[in-house]
Image 1 (cartoon, rainbow, N blue to C red):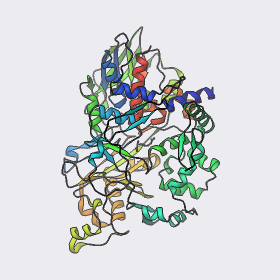
Image 2: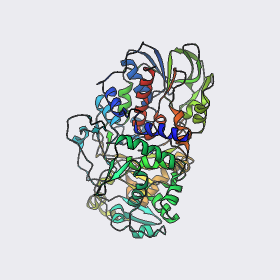
Image 3: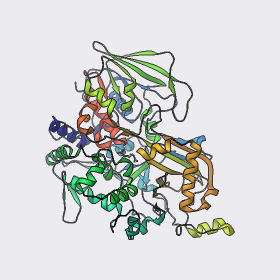
Image 4: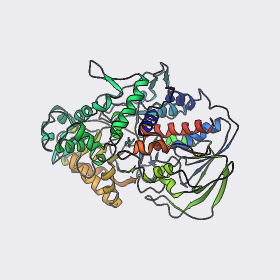
Length: 583
Ligand code: ARG
């Protein structure tokens, strides 16, 4: 049974089936209208949840001639974990910043192709710091997907774009030492030693090397040190074997047992590479994450905010807002759904409550496209199959916390000469070396704020200021930030920035800051599913499986390769639409 689960999940992770079809290619064509869903007798479909998954599914079903309605719990917005803070929240209402999804790896072709199809403008997102030159033209860069079938899919004809290398001017601050990323890369020894880890490798290089054991299951190493995918048949069996062998491993156990890492190395690399808070989570998640989040990846962001994508998806969709689904009854031939209004104070932490007059909806089929944990608060009649209930109850939902801080000027783009000119006689040197003129990139620190991200672009609509993601935390790190009051979070994040870049930054801080806890969000109930050891195989096969040909499931939790990514939500939404029309 474990072997069978491994094969099922291997296919799901690689988006393929028993015939080695390339589902990514199929989904790309469906999303961009080059292909249609199989014609089927029109059904009345209720989609629950106007996040990316639900809206993608609804659009495909509508285009195929089905009668579709979407129910959304939030009164005030659609988009789910795509959420852009804009307008009055900021002193300068021209600014915007992301509470949720913010960066799209260029390999996430489903997201980019859908956005391009909907004409949602994008531009590069810089994970590393680059010179502050406008690179807006590269936003329409083509993104290419080369299938194992030999077919190629491109999002456009504009030249491709590869992100430049970072300047290395942002800071590493651990164990009381503060050095630039460039200094750490040139001589990792002293920082590593401060953890008791005696190595001349950077933390990033050490972790990359540690993943070779996992890579070898599905890839071959070339003479020049790069890796290439094995043929698809071997990738599937290799992925199944990888799951079979290592799904039971936490990241910590893998690093210790398979790679022989010392505690000191685990701590050093964990702290610098954002692994510490997830050491107890399933190892496979870190393998996937490492290929999506690393300095060599090219990213895009949506120029007008990520919610430009969800607003484009919502356009012309029949969405009823403020409807919280509380009951789903399977009757003969159809489904009855009971929804109650969202009511109560609209509170930033909890976003609404439930109560008031309920109403009933009848449909032929229902797509449940809400975060998995939310289904625990829905009554199903008859109860869902055992495996499904277990998955809903037990799948680990991680949390993420972001603190966004507004500044009146973009001091992170200034070099030391600019600082001198700005401050005149008030000028004091930076505490940790001269400032480098740059946009994007960020700092890593072992203090509570942990990860800082600077905006990738000089300006929003000519605004002189900008919003810094002053603390982005996951898991345990996020929980501890969650427990603070909003004012405490601001103080913590601002003190941290002042410690790194000098007291001189404080004069540009406005009193505006917004933080987002995804765990405390009433309708999200967490950041995303990230399995604990063993869950991919024991629960994974149940997650997306339809029930009685009438209940379908969508959401990034349904796509194990892309939990916590828009691409996962999109793939799952397409999959649900395909399932619904192929019965
Ligand atoms: N996609 C989000 C980001 O870019 C979350 C990443 C966390 N990774 C994950 N697989 N949960 O930060």
